Image (cartoon, rainbow, N blue to C red; front, side):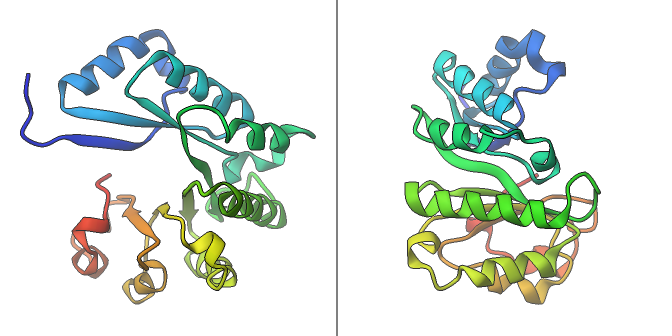
Length: 206
């Protein structure tokens, strides 16, 4: 069936256990609905490796490899080096999901910041964009991004930010030509000033 509008799913957790027994059908249904491509998101070294395997099986699946802030504390010695190696694998198009999260208390803040910095540095080295998770830490995220704002090697890359922007006046600080943001819908974003002020050509629908 032909669709007038093609969609590209930039953030899909295809390694979720509930999908493992029906991945062929899930990806086929997406294709039938007009989704022309999917980026499978890694959150640990194990899921990142599985995403790379999936991309080798499905022609319309690409990959982001990384360690999610809520799982950084579970990372073992050597996990990060494996992420660096996976970043060179075929069809890896981004790094993440990385970022910062103060909603959950799974990982100490200093560990989150450390791993976020590792992803940022790797982005600068590889030229791969970042998939950034942000929850309940908008001000802190702005501060961390401000620290790297002058590094042209890093800021020349794109970043896809997944989070709730509670204060619209902060949006322009990261809404630069090198940052593409999507407002994750925690129901408040639908009619907020943040939604009205965003550029639809640099937005992603949740």
